[in-house]
Length: 382
Image 1: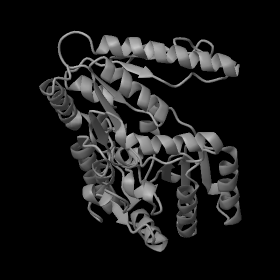
Image 2: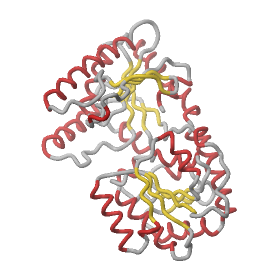
Image 3: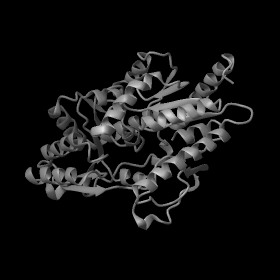
Image 4: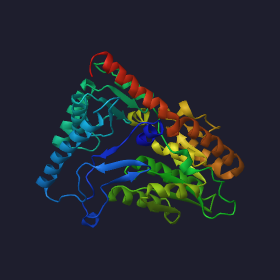
C-alpha cells in the first residue's frame, strides 16, 4: 500500500521483494517480475523457484544483495529525491539496506508496524535477533514511519534523534465498496474473523464468543479466514468440537487478497477479539481498516490506538480487552438489531475512508520524504 500511496502522490515507485519464491517445484513458472496496480515489481533473487540446497540458497542471498545494490544505485541517481522505504522484519536486511542507501546518498526509511521482538525464534537466530534489536536504535536511518503512538514514543526514546511519521493502517477503501447489508433472508448469517490462525488467543476468543451466542442464533455461523500451523488449526478445530459448535465453525483457509472484498461482502459482522498485551498496545491490525471499509459493524478490543480512531457504540463496538463477557454481549446486540448494526457499518466505513485510505496519507508520506531529503542536503549529506 505504501507504493500505491507514493504513486498517487506523484512519485516514481518500484517494489523490490526480498522474499524468495516458494520452494514447491510447482511454482517453477511463478512470475518474479511484472507490474501490479501500475507499479513495477520484482523478486530481487532474479529467478522463479526456490533452491532446495542450503548453499544454493546462500548464494541466492548474495545475489540478492548485489541486485539490491544496483537497484538502490539506480533509484538514488540523478536529480531529485531518491529514497528507499525498508519493509522487513529482518535486522540483517534493515542494516544492509540502510547502509547501501546512505552510501548512495539516498534517504533511508524504515516501516515499523510492530514492536520488535524475537517471536518464536530459537538458538542462534533468536540471539542474532536480540542483537539486532539492540542495534536498531543506532542505525543511521533518516526516518521511521510508525503505525502507532506507542512506536512513536519507542523510537523517540532511542539514543539518536530519528524523525518519525505516524501513519496508521492503510487500505484502499474503494476496493471494498459500500455494498448493502446482507439480505434479512440470507442464510447462514456470517460472523467473520480474518487473520493468521497462529494468533491462537484471538481465534480461541472468537470461537468462544460465537459459542456463547450460537444457541440463541441458530442461523448464524462463524467463518475463520486465514491459515496457520497445522497444530494451531487442529487446536481450533478441537476447541469448536469440545464446546459443541464444530458444525457451525467454517475454516475457510487462505483467501487471495483480490477475493477478500467478496468474502467480506457476505459478512454480517466482523470480530477482532485481541487480548491485551505489549504487542497489541504497540500495533494496529491491518484487518481493522479492511473490516471497516467493508461497511459492516465491527467488534474490536480497545488496544493501543484503536480508541483514538473509533468511538465506542458509534463507529464500532470497542470493548475492554479483559472483558470477554462484554464482547459477547456486543455480538449478541449486533445480531439482534440489524438496523442499528447497518447504521454502525456505514459510520465505520466513513472512518476507514477518512482515517485509513491510502490516498489520505499519500501527500503526508511524500512530504515527509522530501523534508528528510532537504535536511540531508542542508547538512551536506548529498
